[in-house]
Picture 1: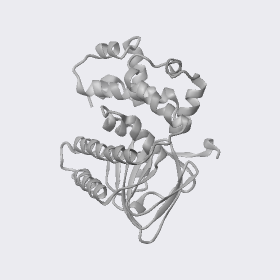
Picture 2: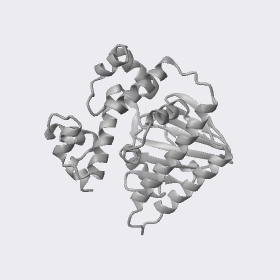
Picture 3: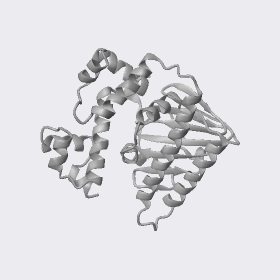
Picture 4: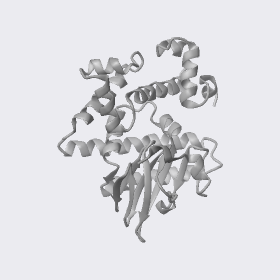
Length: 292
């Protein structure tokens, strides 16, 4: 596949062809899974998609791999993955949410042990929910829908963000339960990914060089990069930067620390470097983000 020819699709793009409920350029609600835009040819998503199939069947491809879903299946498509060829059976029913990368970062900021969630969603783009799990997730979806559609609610976006955190924790519980019931046969690359993410979670405030992590793991930086890329579709540097940005967001929104103090806490050379780093990843200065 020639990746240079693949068109990227964002929440902003999807809003132009879908008339359903949304919040800014951050989240779109699909009350009918068949309303997901019919991508003509491969499209790289600059957003995340989580969907539930209640009945019937659907199929599509992620990164050229065919995926088939049926009743009680939950689907994950991550930011940066290439999707195409959505087809549905006549009796297919379900719901879906699409969320921007920035909004997801806000939602997961502060969540612990993200590595299992990340790895599970990559390795299991379609998973089966028990009837009890379906009822719980559908209850959260109904709450999300009620808040997203309530344009009079002054804290609409904040409530949606909090509800999504609760939903992710419920999904994480499903993941942990599934993993405890199934013997683990992870590949070498998958084990490297989990070890790497665990190290990053503990050390990203002080260590941001891929070479440091490869040395700690007793493998070459090249092998580490290849393993992380094969499992997650992203580079080690991208994952390190992601954790730094998440922490910056949390500190800017949930602490009274000055930007100078944050600069020191996260071991940036100076405020100017931090500001440039933050704007490159978030699209605005730290001060602008704090004042949103």
